[in-house]
Length: 326
Image (cartoon, rainbow, N blue to C red; front, side):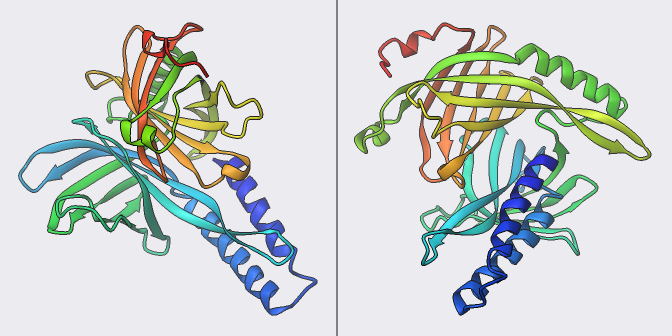
Protein backbone atom coordinates (compact mmCIF):
# COMPACT_ATOMS: atom_id res chain seq x y z
CA UNK A 1 0.00 0.00 0.00
CA UNK A 2 2.83 2.40 0.91
CA UNK A 3 4.70 1.74 -2.34
CA UNK A 4 1.50 2.28 -4.30
CA UNK A 5 0.77 5.56 -2.49
CA UNK A 6 4.33 6.81 -3.11
CA UNK A 7 3.96 5.99 -6.81
CA UNK A 8 0.60 7.75 -7.14
CA UNK A 9 1.74 10.80 -5.21
CA UNK A 10 4.94 10.96 -7.28
CA UNK A 11 2.97 10.98 -10.52
CA UNK A 12 0.55 13.59 -9.24
CA UNK A 13 3.31 15.74 -7.72
CA UNK A 14 5.27 15.73 -10.94
CA UNK A 15 2.13 16.88 -12.71
CA UNK A 16 1.81 19.77 -10.27
CA UNK A 17 5.49 20.79 -10.58
CA UNK A 18 5.28 20.84 -14.36
CA UNK A 19 3.08 23.94 -14.23
CA UNK A 20 5.21 26.03 -11.85
CA UNK A 21 7.06 27.85 -14.62
CA UNK A 22 4.05 28.58 -16.78
CA UNK A 23 1.17 30.51 -15.23
CA UNK A 24 -1.20 30.51 -18.21
CA UNK A 25 -4.88 30.09 -17.32
CA UNK A 26 -4.85 26.50 -18.62
CA UNK A 27 -1.82 25.59 -16.56
CA UNK A 28 -3.27 27.23 -13.48
CA UNK A 29 -6.29 24.96 -13.82
CA UNK A 30 -4.06 21.92 -14.34
CA UNK A 31 -1.91 22.83 -11.35
CA UNK A 32 -4.98 23.18 -9.14
CA UNK A 33 -6.31 19.81 -10.33
CA UNK A 34 -2.95 18.13 -9.68
CA UNK A 35 -2.84 19.52 -6.13
CA UNK A 36 -6.41 18.36 -5.50
CA UNK A 37 -5.51 14.92 -6.85
CA UNK A 38 -2.55 14.63 -4.50
CA UNK A 39 -4.65 15.59 -1.48
CA UNK A 40 -7.41 13.13 -2.43
CA UNK A 41 -4.90 10.28 -2.93
CA UNK A 42 -3.21 10.93 0.44
CA UNK A 43 -6.60 10.97 2.19
CA UNK A 44 -8.14 7.90 0.54
CA UNK A 45 -5.02 5.75 0.93
CA UNK A 46 -5.63 5.69 4.69
CA UNK A 47 -8.82 3.63 4.24
CA UNK A 48 -8.17 1.95 0.88
CA UNK A 49 -8.51 -1.83 0.86
CA UNK A 50 -11.09 -4.56 1.43
CA UNK A 51 -13.65 -4.79 4.23
CA UNK A 52 -15.66 -7.94 4.95
CA UNK A 53 -18.54 -8.72 7.27
CA UNK A 54 -22.30 -9.10 7.53
CA UNK A 55 -25.21 -7.23 6.03
CA UNK A 56 -28.38 -7.72 8.06
CA UNK A 57 -31.32 -7.12 5.75
CA UNK A 58 -34.54 -5.50 6.92
CA UNK A 59 -36.28 -8.90 6.71
CA UNK A 60 -33.72 -10.40 9.09
CA UNK A 61 -31.70 -12.33 6.48
CA UNK A 62 -27.91 -12.23 6.83
CA UNK A 63 -25.49 -11.90 3.90
CA UNK A 64 -21.69 -11.98 3.92
CA UNK A 65 -20.42 -9.04 1.85
CA UNK A 66 -17.17 -7.36 0.89
CA UNK A 67 -16.58 -3.71 0.00
CA UNK A 68 -13.26 -2.83 -1.62
CA UNK A 69 -12.16 0.80 -1.77
CA UNK A 70 -9.88 1.51 -4.73
CA UNK A 71 -8.14 4.73 -5.75
CA UNK A 72 -7.67 5.20 -9.49
CA UNK A 73 -5.91 7.76 -11.68
CA UNK A 74 -7.97 8.31 -14.84
CA UNK A 75 -7.15 10.35 -17.91
CA UNK A 76 -9.94 12.89 -18.44
CA UNK A 77 -8.49 14.92 -21.30
CA UNK A 78 -5.45 16.27 -23.08
CA UNK A 79 -3.48 19.50 -22.79
CA UNK A 80 -2.58 21.50 -25.87
CA UNK A 81 0.88 19.92 -25.85
CA UNK A 82 -0.67 16.45 -25.89
CA UNK A 83 0.12 15.60 -22.26
CA UNK A 84 -2.56 13.85 -20.23
CA UNK A 85 -4.93 15.56 -17.80
CA UNK A 86 -5.36 13.10 -14.94
CA UNK A 87 -7.98 12.98 -12.21
CA UNK A 88 -7.83 10.91 -9.05
CA UNK A 89 -11.03 8.95 -8.43
CA UNK A 90 -12.26 7.34 -5.22
CA UNK A 91 -14.11 4.16 -6.27
CA UNK A 92 -15.61 1.05 -4.69
CA UNK A 93 -16.50 -2.54 -5.54
CA UNK A 94 -19.41 -4.27 -3.75
CA UNK A 95 -19.40 -8.08 -3.65
CA UNK A 96 -21.87 -10.44 -2.00
CA UNK A 97 -19.81 -13.45 -0.90
CA UNK A 98 -22.59 -15.57 0.60
CA UNK A 99 -24.95 -16.21 -1.02
CA UNK A 100 -22.61 -15.61 -3.93
CA UNK A 101 -23.39 -13.07 -6.66
CA UNK A 102 -21.57 -11.03 -9.29
CA UNK A 103 -19.43 -8.12 -8.09
CA UNK A 104 -20.89 -4.63 -8.50
CA UNK A 105 -18.11 -2.51 -10.01
CA UNK A 106 -17.78 1.11 -11.09
CA UNK A 107 -19.19 2.58 -7.87
CA UNK A 108 -18.25 6.14 -6.89
CA UNK A 109 -16.91 6.76 -3.38
CA UNK A 110 -16.37 9.88 -1.31
CA UNK A 111 -14.46 9.77 1.98
CA UNK A 112 -14.36 12.67 4.48
CA UNK A 113 -11.47 12.00 6.90
CA UNK A 114 -12.41 14.69 9.44
CA UNK A 115 -15.47 12.69 10.52
CA UNK A 116 -14.63 9.28 9.03
CA UNK A 117 -17.68 9.47 6.75
CA UNK A 118 -17.93 7.37 3.60
CA UNK A 119 -20.55 7.67 0.87
CA UNK A 120 -20.79 5.18 -2.00
CA UNK A 121 -23.16 5.74 -4.93
CA UNK A 122 -24.14 3.66 -7.93
CA UNK A 123 -23.98 5.87 -11.04
CA UNK A 124 -25.94 3.37 -13.15
CA UNK A 125 -29.17 5.10 -14.23
CA UNK A 126 -30.83 1.82 -15.23
CA UNK A 127 -30.84 0.09 -11.82
CA UNK A 128 -34.08 -1.40 -10.52
CA UNK A 129 -35.87 -0.29 -7.37
CA UNK A 130 -34.41 -3.10 -5.26
CA UNK A 131 -30.82 -2.78 -6.57
CA UNK A 132 -28.10 -1.11 -4.51
CA UNK A 133 -28.33 2.64 -4.99
CA UNK A 134 -26.16 4.09 -2.20
CA UNK A 135 -24.24 3.30 0.98
CA UNK A 136 -23.64 5.68 3.86
CA UNK A 137 -21.09 4.57 6.44
CA UNK A 138 -18.40 5.54 8.89
CA UNK A 139 -14.92 4.04 9.20
CA UNK A 140 -13.27 3.92 12.60
CA UNK A 141 -10.45 1.69 13.84
CA UNK A 142 -10.72 -0.52 10.75
CA UNK A 143 -14.46 -1.08 11.10
CA UNK A 144 -16.91 0.12 8.43
CA UNK A 145 -20.49 0.38 9.66
CA UNK A 146 -23.48 1.85 7.90
CA UNK A 147 -26.64 1.49 5.86
CA UNK A 148 -27.15 0.04 2.38
CA UNK A 149 -30.04 1.60 0.42
CA UNK A 150 -31.97 0.99 -2.75
CA UNK A 151 -34.20 3.46 -4.58
CA UNK A 152 -37.10 2.09 -2.56
CA UNK A 153 -35.46 2.50 0.86
CA UNK A 154 -33.15 0.74 3.31
CA UNK A 155 -31.96 -2.72 2.24
CA UNK A 156 -30.02 -3.45 5.41
CA UNK A 157 -27.36 -2.47 7.90
CA UNK A 158 -23.75 -3.62 7.69
CA UNK A 159 -20.73 -4.02 9.94
CA UNK A 160 -17.50 -4.85 8.11
CA UNK A 161 -13.93 -5.25 9.27
CA UNK A 162 -10.80 -4.30 7.34
CA UNK A 163 -9.04 -7.34 5.91
CA UNK A 164 -5.68 -7.68 4.26
CA UNK A 165 -6.41 -9.76 1.21
CA UNK A 166 -8.19 -12.54 3.11
CA UNK A 167 -10.73 -13.60 5.67
CA UNK A 168 -11.26 -11.16 8.52
CA UNK A 169 -9.99 -11.86 12.01
CA UNK A 170 -13.00 -13.25 13.84
CA UNK A 171 -11.57 -12.33 17.22
CA UNK A 172 -10.39 -15.85 18.06
CA UNK A 173 -6.79 -15.34 19.15
CA UNK A 174 -4.24 -12.54 18.73
CA UNK A 175 -3.42 -10.75 15.51
CA UNK A 176 -0.22 -12.82 15.23
CA UNK A 177 -2.26 -16.04 15.44
CA UNK A 178 -4.60 -14.64 12.82
CA UNK A 179 -1.68 -13.70 10.56
CA UNK A 180 -0.25 -17.18 10.95
CA UNK A 181 -3.56 -18.70 9.82
CA UNK A 182 -3.52 -16.44 6.78
CA UNK A 183 0.04 -17.47 5.92
CA UNK A 184 -0.97 -21.13 5.91
CA UNK A 185 -4.05 -20.42 3.78
CA UNK A 186 -2.15 -18.31 1.25
CA UNK A 187 0.73 -20.78 1.04
CA UNK A 188 -1.73 -23.53 0.15
CA UNK A 189 -3.25 -21.63 -2.79
CA UNK A 190 -0.12 -19.78 -3.99
CA UNK A 191 1.31 -20.81 -7.35
CA UNK A 192 0.64 -20.77 -11.08
CA UNK A 193 -2.88 -21.21 -12.49
CA UNK A 194 -3.54 -21.82 -16.21
CA UNK A 195 -6.88 -21.23 -17.85
CA UNK A 196 -9.06 -19.20 -20.13
CA UNK A 197 -11.74 -16.53 -20.22
CA UNK A 198 -14.83 -17.24 -22.33
CA UNK A 199 -17.00 -14.17 -23.04
CA UNK A 200 -20.74 -14.05 -22.48
CA UNK A 201 -23.01 -14.31 -25.50
CA UNK A 202 -23.62 -10.56 -25.34
CA UNK A 203 -19.91 -9.75 -25.27
CA UNK A 204 -19.24 -12.20 -28.10
CA UNK A 205 -21.77 -10.36 -30.23
CA UNK A 206 -19.82 -7.18 -29.51
CA UNK A 207 -16.61 -8.74 -30.79
CA UNK A 208 -15.00 -10.10 -27.62
CA UNK A 209 -13.01 -13.31 -28.09
CA UNK A 210 -12.00 -16.12 -25.78
CA UNK A 211 -8.39 -16.13 -24.63
CA UNK A 212 -5.99 -18.14 -22.50
CA UNK A 213 -4.18 -16.62 -19.57
CA UNK A 214 -2.01 -17.30 -16.53
CA UNK A 215 -2.59 -16.26 -12.92
CA UNK A 216 0.34 -16.29 -10.51
CA UNK A 217 -0.52 -15.96 -6.82
CA UNK A 218 2.02 -15.40 -4.06
CA UNK A 219 2.33 -14.40 -0.42
CA UNK A 220 3.63 -10.89 0.32
CA UNK A 221 4.63 -9.77 3.80
CA UNK A 222 3.73 -6.14 4.46
CA UNK A 223 5.46 -4.30 7.31
CA UNK A 224 2.99 -2.82 9.79
CA UNK A 225 3.10 -1.26 13.24
CA UNK A 226 1.04 -2.87 16.01
CA UNK A 227 1.23 -0.31 18.82
CA UNK A 228 4.90 0.02 19.70
CA UNK A 229 5.83 -3.20 17.93
CA UNK A 230 6.54 -3.82 14.26
CA UNK A 231 5.46 -6.98 12.50
CA UNK A 232 4.59 -8.22 9.03
CA UNK A 233 1.09 -8.84 7.76
CA UNK A 234 0.48 -11.50 5.06
CA UNK A 235 -1.17 -10.32 1.86
CA UNK A 236 -2.26 -12.34 -1.17
CA UNK A 237 -0.98 -10.72 -4.37
CA UNK A 238 -0.55 -11.83 -7.95
CA UNK A 239 -0.22 -11.19 -11.67
CA UNK A 240 -2.79 -11.79 -14.44
CA UNK A 241 -1.24 -12.18 -17.90
CA UNK A 242 -3.08 -12.91 -21.15
CA UNK A 243 -1.23 -15.33 -23.45
CA UNK A 244 -1.82 -13.26 -26.59
CA UNK A 245 -0.59 -10.05 -24.96
CA UNK A 246 3.11 -10.15 -25.92
CA UNK A 247 3.78 -6.52 -24.90
CA UNK A 248 2.01 -6.72 -21.51
CA UNK A 249 -0.53 -4.05 -22.46
CA UNK A 250 -3.15 -5.84 -20.33
CA UNK A 251 -0.88 -7.02 -17.52
CA UNK A 252 -2.73 -6.70 -14.20
CA UNK A 253 -1.51 -6.54 -10.61
CA UNK A 254 -3.80 -8.56 -8.35
CA UNK A 255 -4.76 -8.37 -4.70
CA UNK A 256 -6.69 -11.28 -3.30
CA UNK A 257 -9.43 -12.05 -0.82
CA UNK A 258 -9.81 -15.73 0.15
CA UNK A 259 -12.68 -17.17 2.21
CA UNK A 260 -12.11 -20.85 2.93
CA UNK A 261 -14.71 -20.70 5.69
CA UNK A 262 -17.41 -20.66 3.00
CA UNK A 263 -18.64 -23.71 1.08
CA UNK A 264 -17.37 -23.69 -1.58
CA UNK A 265 -14.32 -21.56 -0.75
CA UNK A 266 -14.44 -18.17 -2.48
CA UNK A 267 -11.44 -16.46 -4.07
CA UNK A 268 -11.85 -12.84 -5.17
CA UNK A 269 -9.08 -11.13 -7.15
CA UNK A 270 -9.07 -7.39 -7.83
CA UNK A 271 -7.00 -6.37 -10.84
CA UNK A 272 -5.33 -3.03 -11.54
CA UNK A 273 -3.79 -2.43 -14.93
CA UNK A 274 -0.64 -0.60 -15.92
CA UNK A 275 0.40 1.85 -18.65
CA UNK A 276 -2.37 3.35 -20.74
CA UNK A 277 -4.88 0.97 -19.13
CA UNK A 278 -4.66 2.79 -15.76
CA UNK A 279 -8.25 3.39 -14.62
CA UNK A 280 -9.51 0.06 -16.00
CA UNK A 281 -10.05 -2.53 -13.29
CA UNK A 282 -11.35 -6.07 -13.11
CA UNK A 283 -12.81 -8.29 -10.43
CA UNK A 284 -12.58 -12.08 -10.59
CA UNK A 285 -14.82 -13.84 -8.08
CA UNK A 286 -15.61 -17.51 -7.88
CA UNK A 287 -15.08 -20.88 -6.23
CA UNK A 288 -11.68 -22.47 -5.62
CA UNK A 289 -11.80 -26.23 -5.07
CA UNK A 290 -9.38 -28.29 -2.97
CA UNK A 291 -8.02 -29.64 -6.27
CA UNK A 292 -7.11 -26.13 -7.40
CA UNK A 293 -9.93 -25.60 -9.89
CA UNK A 294 -10.97 -21.94 -10.05
CA UNK A 295 -14.26 -21.06 -11.76
CA UNK A 296 -15.13 -17.38 -11.57
CA UNK A 297 -16.97 -14.46 -13.11
CA UNK A 298 -14.83 -12.00 -15.06
CA UNK A 299 -16.16 -8.49 -14.41
CA UNK A 300 -14.72 -5.10 -15.38
CA UNK A 301 -15.28 -1.51 -14.32
CA UNK A 302 -16.42 -0.55 -17.81
CA UNK A 303 -18.51 -3.51 -19.03
CA UNK A 304 -19.75 -5.39 -15.97
CA UNK A 305 -19.80 -9.18 -16.38
CA UNK A 306 -17.68 -9.92 -19.46
CA UNK A 307 -17.37 -13.66 -19.22
CA UNK A 308 -16.55 -16.83 -17.30
CA UNK A 309 -13.10 -17.91 -16.14
CA UNK A 310 -11.93 -21.53 -16.03
CA UNK A 311 -8.53 -22.07 -14.39
CA UNK A 312 -6.69 -24.81 -12.56
CA UNK A 313 -3.45 -24.92 -10.64
CA UNK A 314 -0.46 -25.96 -12.72
CA UNK A 315 0.74 -25.73 -16.32
CA UNK A 316 -2.10 -27.66 -17.99
CA UNK A 317 -5.38 -26.06 -19.05
CA UNK A 318 -8.93 -27.13 -18.04
CA UNK A 319 -11.06 -29.03 -20.55
CA UNK A 320 -13.22 -25.92 -21.02
CA UNK A 321 -10.23 -24.27 -22.71
CA UNK A 322 -9.76 -26.98 -25.36
CA UNK A 323 -11.24 -24.90 -28.18
CA UNK A 324 -9.59 -21.62 -27.16
CA UNK A 325 -6.81 -20.94 -29.68
CA UNK A 326 -5.21 -17.71 -28.53
